Amino acid sequence: MNRTDVKPVGELTLRTLAMPADANAAGDIFGGWVMAQMDLACGIRAAERARGRVVTAAVKEMSFAKPMKVGDTLCVYIDITKVGTTSLTLRVEAWAQRYLSDLMERVTHADFVMVAVDADGKPTPVPQES
View 1 (tube, rainbow, N blue to C red):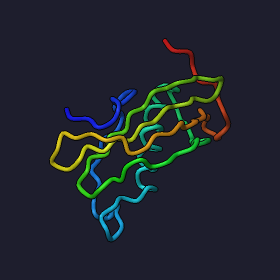
View 2: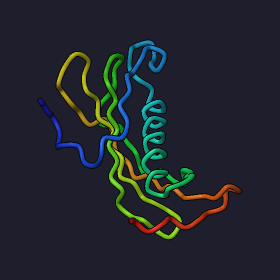
View 3: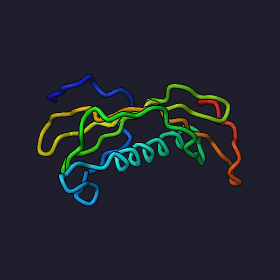
């Protein structure tokens, strides 16, 4: 596979297609859409690790290195970098697989902090890994 950046780090957690409804008039995908997909992927991965409900507590600095275009496939990779008492820190990378191409380019990356919560929405301990 052709790459113009470093290799993705982490586990491929989400793949989705960028559609015209997710773009501005020039065909550039909204950054907020990309960030929402990253948040979805974090929710999936963190809930699996916490074995329960999680919420997003923070997103640490995010900047966009490359645009996403209509037709690109967004690939979100997750690496859990820290497990605290009730929180998890996840390194998230968003990559664009360019339309009808094997070319992969990193669009953005950030650290997300997710907190495990109980049924009442109060922080709860993240179980030890089995």
